[in-house]
Image 1 (cartoon, one colour):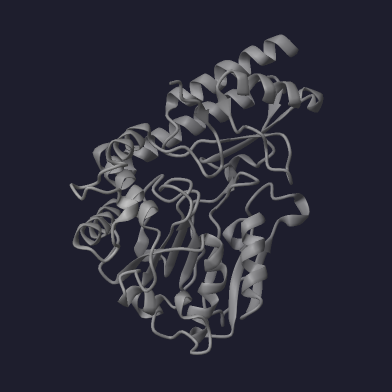
Image 2: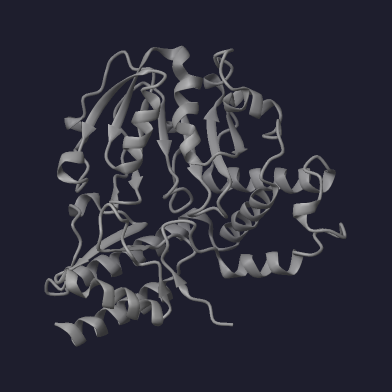
Length: 360
């Protein structure tokens, strides 16, 4: 069996070590005589595995005791509605940064429930940079501030937080566990699992205790953070396999030095890839402002777009898959999450150089 280098933005690559562990346990997990997908989520074995997964995540991220950790369904997109519904008790207006595709979607959903003040908007330029904090138009009466620190489609990222006394709510789907984060500076962190955590179908929500318990009585209960917290994320049947596999990834991260070690590797991967693109004599270019470049999602454009099809066909044949850019952007995109090692980036750079020499 020969595994490819998977540069997909999500569902993304998983650590091979983890996949092999899952393979060994597929038919019989934990001495149960059945797969983890077949046992009760309320049975002691799964409850113990779920609790261990939560503890490992708390350890990895340094999550304070006054935060709940929820393992939910619905994808990160479901939180676009859940957040304004849970936090509307703080006020009828919220601040939102519009720095990319997902920020735009979050704004559209929030407007159904709350007045939205857009603090910055880079859509006119095609999401090429993130405005400095001094250019954001924050509201004095906002209930909270919502940000998307990494936009997977455009490949735009910022690693700072706005100066505010309001709860900051952040979609960390693309960057969670890729580097250390001070959770105490956020009101809510949420992330879809399918990039740095595990398979699609699971969403992590980390929410400060004082922000739960105020949900509107006439809205769907499963979006109420208090309901899910009081039931240990099991008010309904949770995505047990995804939760179990996420726990395996958390353990793998701890075994490999945690988020501090991941940050060093991820910085090295991004530096290598951007460095090569910038030094390619214009054959490849990255359209994003240097100070707004994503560590996780690296878009690049060939100087001759007529070569795009050949690049994708030949890279695919070379075992480098999912490099096609998002349909709204075009070009190429390499997503280099935690499970993508330096060897994968080196393989990509070797191919890019050989393709350049053959087609310049």
